[in-house]
Image (cartoon, rainbow, N blue to C red; front, side, top):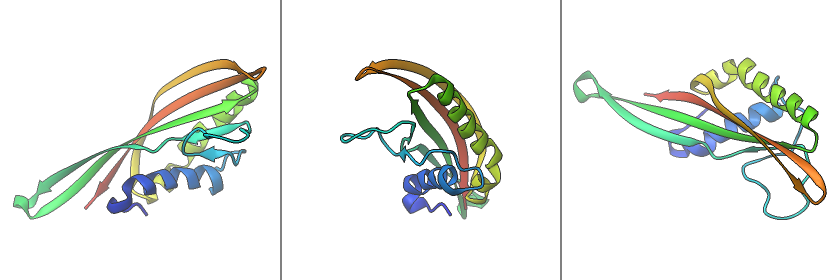
Length: 143
């Protein structure tokens, strides 16, 4: 469950666990929170950046009750050496998130919407690397 004192970590962990171990787990274990700084990079690779969180406090009931509303922005990058396999992994991730809304909801994250995507490629040590970025949002309310 998501806790306000560890909000960024908890929200990231919900998505990581969902993609790694849930009923809708994806086919790669190479999931990170940032692009690796050193060492050998293995493809395919998925990066879930720390979420961007905007926390608002709403006071109701004549000031006696407080509700905290968080808007959450997830940015995910998917890297692969094959454009065809990249497309398959993108579909896996999107379907996992769409079909796993119940899991997110049970952790308090609701109103999931895909908002943006982008594609790029480059040559790295003689290999063509394909990258797809995906952004989606969610909303969390805590009383």
